[in-house]
Amino acid sequence: MFHGSMVALATPMKKGGELDYESMSRLVEFHIENQTDGIVAVGTTGESATLDEKEHCDLIRHAVDLARGRVPIIAGTGANSTSEAIHLTHCAMEAGADACLLVTPYYNKPTQEGLYQHYKTIADAVPIPQILYNVPGRTACDMLPETVERLSHIANIVGLKEATGDLGRLKQTLDLCGDRLELYSGDDATGCDFMLQGGHGVISVTSNVAPKTMHEMCVAALAGDAEKAHEIDGRLAGLHRDLFIEANPIPVKWALYEMGLIPDGIRLPLTSLSEQYQEPVRNALRQAGVIQ
Image (cartoon, rainbow, N blue to C red; front, top):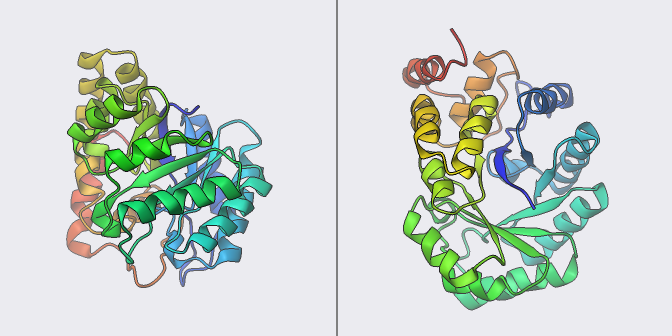
C-alpha cells in the first residue's frame, strides 16, 4: 500500500513546548514539494510520548487536512496501554488517516503472546489498515518474526516497520510472511540495503531534512539499481549517523531549526541539542547538500 521514502515527521513546537501548527503546515508542503512518498505523523520522532490524547488526535487531524490527499498520512497511534492505542487508532480513522503505525508496548515488557493479543485486539476493534512497529532499542520489547507471522494473517494488519537494523530479520520475515505484509526499514543506516534485499520502503528520520535525496535513493533501491542507490545513500551517511548523536528527535529538530523550517521548541524531558554536537550535525547537512 505504501512504498518508498516515508518521513517520521518531527512535531514543530515553539519555545516552551507549545505546538506550532503554522510551522507544521510549512513542513507538510516542504515534503510534498520534495516528493516524500508518505508522512508518518505523531510517531516517536513526533514526540508522541509527550503529548496528551487531545493533542495527539488534533495533530493527526491537522496532518490529514494539510495533505488533502496529496500524500498518504500514516498516524502513529501506538501505546503501552491497549485501550489507549484503540482510542488513538479510532481518532486516526475518524480523521481520515490512510493507516496507523503502532509501536510495540514500551516499558511493560509483554510476552510474545501478549504482543499478539495486543495487536489482534486493536485490529479487531478498528478496521483501518495497521502497520506494526518493532524498535526494541527504545521499547525494551522485541517482537519476533514468528509473532509477526501470526499477525500477518489478520486482514487489516498490512505492514511492519522493523527498526532493529538487523537485515537478517528482513529475510526471516520475508520467508515467514511472503507477500502478506509490506516491510519498511526503521533504521536509516541500513534502509538502502533493506530495500535492495526485498523491503518496500523506509520510515525515516533523515527524510525530515533531505526528503528529495531520500526519495531518489528509495526509487533507485526499489528498482534494484544498487550502484545508484548506494551512491546517493553515501551522501546521506553523515545524516544517518549524526541525527542520532543524541536521542532522536533532539538532533533532527535542531537541524530543522538550523534550516529555518521550525522554531527551536522541544518538550521535556528532551532538551535542545548539546553545543558540542551542533557542528557535526551541521557538517552532515552540508555533506548531504542540504545547506551550504
